Length: 348
Ligand code: TLP
Image (tube, rainbow, N blue to C red; front, side, top):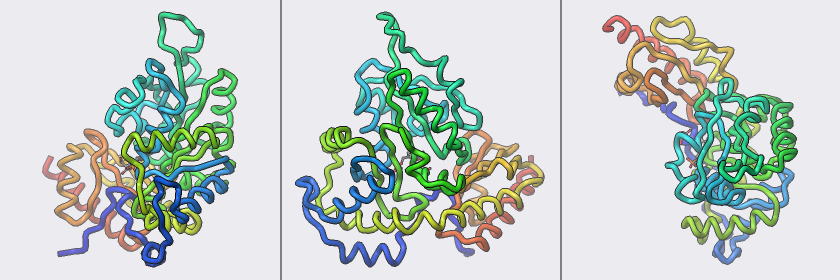
């Protein structure tokens, strides 16, 4: 049996040896009483790194996002987001369930929304017979568009536009460190002005569990009760936060390796019969290519050949690079994808 190359997601990364050691030795307490010193340190550090007043540790990115959505809205409001954003595709309709809101989606250019795309979708006139916009929602990098990056001037334009209209703006920054690495900037600069930012420790940053929501002290204080309402009040969570601190401080510096491996994959796959991919469109660690055959069937064949990938559309397949798959394994994965493509192409 060849080794399996797992490119389904960067969520599959295992904690590093340094993380495991820190977890074993973590100082802990009951975090529902705010008595876990390691969680408290992680929250203080996250706020500092993002230049915000406060932060809260949550079990998942989905929970961080849903807490933010509830913080900024009231039932009956609209949340304007990109058409294929995670909150739309993968968060189980929770905007409606937990916050009583509906999503108004706007297609971006390869996932990137500009103010000119958003403005016509806003409803802020106060008309009594029209649901009003309550929140703007941006995703950077954009997952389903293939890890695309919203550049700094666009981020600034979105913040300015939102605030001019009196609207809060949230960033689903699950992979915001990838965006910052691709742009050669830091996350505090990239997210300046956003009312809240959610980012994940458990994706490319390799922590086993956890995300952070950062924002004002008042919002994060309210977020604590919303987290508890969702069942996210953890007890000796310092064992997780210990890994999170390493994820936050040490792992962003290596993300460019994942980006280089994604380029390697894209370049090797471009020009393969039966596949469509433009390496110039791969900006971070996510590679989405088109297939001529059914994507789910293609993914099954890939699995049999030793590569795990994800079908993200009827004819599109996603590969995500991460720390646990090095350049040699990515090169091997590219060969396998090409072989499977040729096989399915000949069969079709
Ligand atoms: N993304 C996962 C899947 O849910 C699709 C992945 O494998 O990429 N925002 C964004 C942009 C995300 O990509 C994800 C997870 C989340 C939020 C949710 O994070 P978790 O999985 O921690 O709830």
